[in-house]
Figure 1 (cartoon, rainbow, N blue to C red):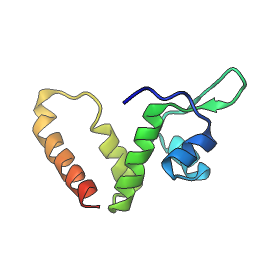
Figure 2: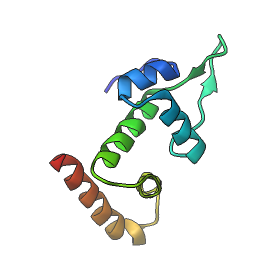
Figure 3: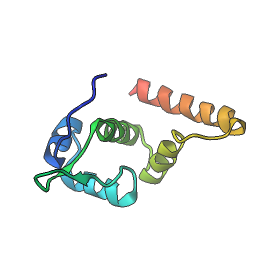
Figure 4: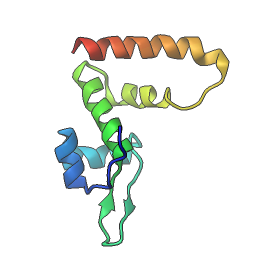
Length: 101
């Protein structure tokens, strides 16, 4: 997937189907990182933000709460080998639920 150019919050909302206020809520909750300001003073978002918001939208659509989604996003962080089996089973469940949607 090619890297996306930075986009504004309006562009992010259009690309993900998530309204601007929800995006701001997800930022406050720590589900996505706070954006940086570009040269014109606009807050800019990147391809990773599109991917994370798309995941949030899909996970919500299959019934995951926002706290559960935060936990799921945390599973993507590097972990020790002892957690691999448990994390893989959670990931398999999420993937199955998302594919069924």
